Structure formats: structure tokens, C-alpha cells
Length: 150
Image (cartoon, rainbow, N blue to C red):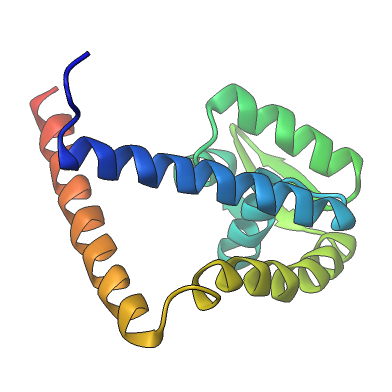
């Protein structure tokens, strides 16, 4: 096996960090009866409600089938309401969904922030943020160019 480039090692480290962070979040959010994906969906719905199922799927990292199953579960648990108007489903939080998110949100933000606050000083955080923004912006431009060529 050949030696991996520094770029590949950085990518692998980022992937591992995100996987570990998601596992820590899943463990943390269990106390609220949520997974990371459900938490992200509830937060997205709160910010854009009423949101269509299509727009919600675009805003999250969940497949079409995955979003349908997750929404069915959130609806069964009384956290969201779906209303169909002709061919479009609009999704909103219920009172229970809003209450759950209001309890979980500050706790989850604290848990995630601690992953950075505990090991990086403010200058390191600013540098990391700038570098991640630069990488993200480039990845969006690459994806846009690829979609235009399809």
C-alpha cells in the first residue's frame, strides 16, 4: 500500500471526526428521545416551517427513503404534523416537537461546542473556521460545476 498524501490524511481525519462527533451526539441526544438526524430535521423544520418534504430532504443529509421513514416516526411520536395540499406535503412542528427541540437544542449546542472549546483556543477556532469555510465554499463550487455538466 502506498503512502497516503497529506490531503488524503486530512480528509480521513475529518471523516473520522464527523463520525465520532455524530456518535457522541447520538449518545447525548438519546436523553431527549432523538437521534442526530431527527434533531437536525426538527431544527430545520423550526427554521423554515412550513417546509416541504422535498426541501427538507435537500437541507439534510438523508436519502429520500430515509427522510420518509424518519418523518413517519416523528409524526407517530407527535413531534411534527404533515399537511398535504394537492401533491405537496408541508411539515411543521407540533407543540410537543417545539418543546422537545427547546429542551434539546441548548444541551446539544453545549455538547458540540465543548468538542472545540476543550482543546482549541479562540485563535485556533477562528483559523479552523476560516479553513473549513474555504473548503466548504470550494466543495459547493465543485458540486455546482458537476451538476451543470450533467
